[in-house]
Length: 192
Image (tube, rainbow, N blue to C red; front, side, top):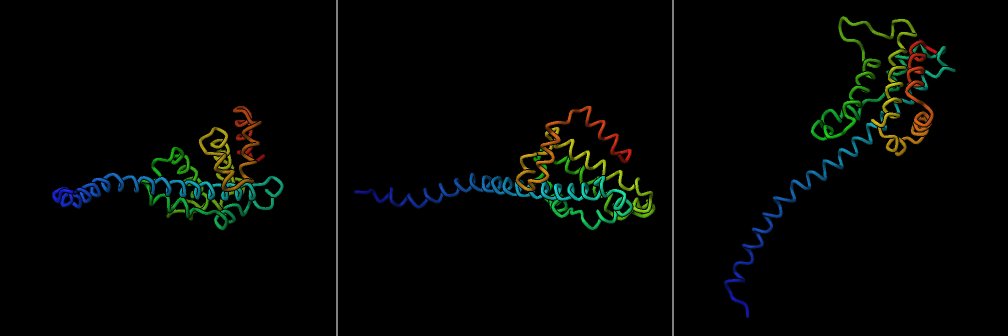
């Protein structure tokens, strides 16, 4: 039959095997959790960027520009969202691995220049000329479109979170060249 010495050593061997297994499984569980959280944050950021992009397009639409341009900053303050970005900033160790994180920070930095109240001593751009106040919005539209066309922002992820914006960006990606982008950027800055 079985030797009692072998049977007596089985619980200790099981405990040692369990401990060794936990040494490998705990970091693996953390890595899997971090990847899942990174995907959720990335998806939320893209959804928020798409929403803000749609708001910029809506408020700077050439058909309604003369009606809405003087209220552009106020409309964007009411419409724009930054909650996903604010949360992502608290999770720096997780979002640091995102290849587009630097660009996303730039997009939100430019958006916050539009929607935040000015700091003490700085002028509020909403009280400046109407066409001057909308220039940062036009530049932000160009920045998002160029990043999507250049491949820095993922059009397939935009299509998962907001299909209508991904269709617009795909159309831009198909027919725009670098020369046309420069031409469009110059005309947007001029207010055309």
